[in-house]
Structure formats: C-alpha cells, structure tokens
Image (tube, rainbow, N blue to C red; front, side, top):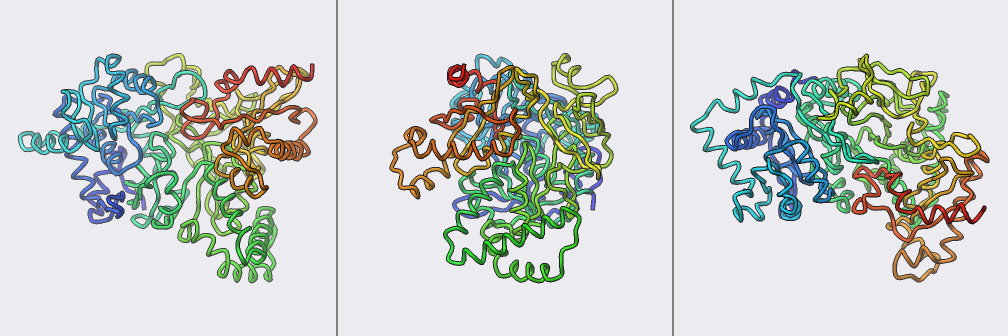
Length: 602
C-alpha cells in the first residue's frame, strides 16, 4: 500500500502518524539491538530540525552529513528535510580535501558528523570553509573544545528549547516544502575528476518510491532490511533510508562490513540489497563451506539440481514434475540451511546493482532459493532506470524500464532515460548539466545497451570505457574483467588496450580468499606482497587468464598481465566507495608496469 505524499516531508510525517508504534530503526548499543519507533524517530527529527533552524539554517540551505550508517543518520536526514533544507551526504572514506570540496562547493554552513575521526578531517580544512559555522558530533567527541563544535545531544536540547518559544517553527518550514524543492545534492564519487553534485528533488524521490514499491511489492509495515552500504550512495539511501519511511520498514544498521553476516543472521531481512562484490563473497563463502562439509556430495547435488531448474526456467521451458518434487525435498533438507547460514531464510528476493555481475553468481544464489534481481540506474535518475520484477527475472539483463520511464538508445547505443525521477542537473555546473541532459530532457547515462526480445535492458558496456585497439577493434573491458574477477583468488582486474596493439591486464589478489587457498597449496608466506611473487601463485593466475582467454575472441584475449603486490583501495583513490575501479587513476599510477607489458612484445 502506497503512503500518500508528494514530498519526503509528507511521506515521513504520514508514516509517523500512521504507524507510530512500529519499529523504524535498530542500532546496536552495548551488544544489544536498541529499537527506535516511528514516533521516537519523528520526535527526534523534529528536535534536530528545530535545532538547525535555531542555528540559522534557512529554507534551501545545505547541511552536510558525514557519518557511517547508524540511526542518527536517518534522523539527521529527515530533520534536514523538515527544516526545508538540503541534505548533502559525504562518504566517510573521503579524505580531508574531498570533505572540503563537497562541504565547500555546497556552501554548507552546518555539518553533522559521526565521531572524532571525521571531526579531525573537518578541522584540518576549516580554513577552506569560511561558511561553516557549526560541526555537530553525533558521539559528542570534541564538543565544546571550540565554538565550532557541539554535540548531537546539545543540538537536540537546543531544538527542544527553541520549540518552547517558537512552537510552529518546524511546522511552518514543512508546509513550505514543494515537490519541486531540492531534497538533496548527492556528489557522485566518480571514476575521474572532481565529484559532481546531482540535484534531486522531493518529487524525484516521491515518484521513485512509489514506482519501486509497485514493481517490488513491498508489504507495508512488514519489511526488514539491513543497512550496510554507504548511505552517501543513492542506492542504499533510497532503500533503507526513505524507502523505510515510505513502506514502514524495520531498518537494522549493521555494525560493520566484517559483522555483516552475523548481523544478517540476527536481523533475518525480508529482502537484501548489495553490490556485485558482496554477492561474489557470498558465492565464494558458500562454496568454501560446502567443500569442507561432511555432507558435501548431497549439498552439491542439491545446488546442481537448483541450477538446472533455474536454467530451464530461464529458457522458458517447463520444469519436469519429478525435478520439482526432488528440488522441493532437497530445498527443505539442504538448501534451507544454506539460506539460514546467510541470514536469508525470510528473504523473498535480493537486489543487485551499481556494477556488472556474473550470471553464474546469480544462478548459484537463485538456485539455493534467493531470487537475485539485477537492476540498473545511476544517481542522476535517483537510482533506478530498470529492475527485474520478482518472479519474472531474466538473468543477464537488468530488467525492463520502471513503468513511467521512457528509455531509448542513441545512434551509438547509449541508453537515454526520461521521466519523473531524472535529476534537475548538477549543482553550480551548467556545462556538465548540458552534457548530461539532452535538449528534450533525456538523461545521457554513459552506458551502452539494448533491449532483448522481451523488452528487458541488456548492458553491454560503459560508453567511455570501450577500448578501441590499434587494429580498430572495439572491446568491452568490463566483460573481460568480470570473467577474470570471477576466479576466487583474483581481487580486481583492469583491462588496458585503448589504441594499443592488444589487451593487457593489471590483476590483484583477493586478500580474504587467497591466504586460505595458499595454505591449502602448502605455500608459506608472510603477506600478500610475498604471495604475489610466488611462482605457484603466478602459475595459478596464468591458468586463470588462459581459461578466460579460451572464452574470448582473439582480439579480446589478454596477451600480457601483471599481478600487483597490493589490492586497489579507497584510501589510494583507486576504487570508489561502491567498489568501482577508477580506471584512469589506476592506468596513470601503474603506467610503468603497463608500458613494460607492451615493450616486452615489441
């Protein structure tokens, strides 16, 4: 059931009024899950909104948010909206200079941040932020040490006091918000250059929430989800953030990525969202456990039957009755235990997006009873362009366009999107806006694709990432990279070859998987650097490359490769917070290694 409202403010207030006693947020405090009801959520957001108004925040002003996922993040985001201000999320992995860029470019006068680590970043660049007047620390660390820093609790107390003398202040602001008003500026992490601030309106969000709910069939007041992907990214924010208020979800905040699995086992979500790398970890983790299980043969038999069933369904063929019966028995006896191990026994489906994912991974996870729905979109259209509907997924596609959106393809195959969720443009960047939006309002996605026979979208590559070899052949590097990364011991892969005679690749080892693999091979080592130079590891990588090359055309085959001694990292700005490689950055950084691969054959 849809919650009425054309703005996020209306959606939020309607939810608080409709189900005040329903649990909205859960965060761990002293080892216990502490619930926050929608009534409490609403009260806290109102206090913080009043506190912001008392600090001088006017309608349309920007307030930055620099925190990991936690209940206060959602409270702050809602409070900013109630104050008719504009929320500007910042990734917690950002460096001080990156924090300075986003806060400065958005002209944020207040920044709400998590702890002392994040406060230190702000203090280092304070001189670059003349408009910043207050830093609010959620944990309270550093509060009171200067006029700049106050605690979250102090902001709430200030808000309560302000409401005593200005009782209609927040209500006046909420009534002023329209669907055309900016709700947020989301600075895309980007793979090149400075981030651009995508301007999304209340109307963009309201339309998207209703459209997604209609496609996915959320059960009002009965959904549970675990929040762990960065809330600075539109994918997570739309789902566990405003999707939580729209559908009355019970949002559990994971303690950390390492604690994700035990947190999932505790929360038992009704659906799950993740980027491909998370599902790849699930896939590898399940396979590793199965390989060491005393009932290995039975479990592998059940998974193989599940995959066979999935492939028949995908081919549009009937599943034999005998297979259905056998699968049902093995599902109850074996596969249900695998789902419980992932905390997914109640999950009706799982959603993946943000980057390409292997069809083998999707088939595997679907085979054990968790339907994986691949979707597609970008910040500039509020996350979704398309998504596979539950029960009607076509593996290898990203689903049909969300109903109400227009999707077409340019002459070069670029996907163009127009609809109510498409952003207003980039903040203070008219040139980038003109390059991204056509004169008739279509969003240039930068992705190349096509419709299949059922009208589902297939993504073939990133337009700007297409490689044209010196021989004039066009190559889609992400396809090759996906095949290389599918090998358990490979962490990341970057294929090079633009204006070169042939493709080469930079490879890294998977820091979580390769140590266990190496020990099983009897390889002694102290660190990844040592492993990357071990002859047995190099031979294993060579075998992987050769196997992948066997599935590619001659022009696509990787002729030379280099195994790097360290994995790519966010700290080194080699990957984005959503685990996309910054291709240009990596190619520049490892220019010498790349030239060596080509000079060796000249």
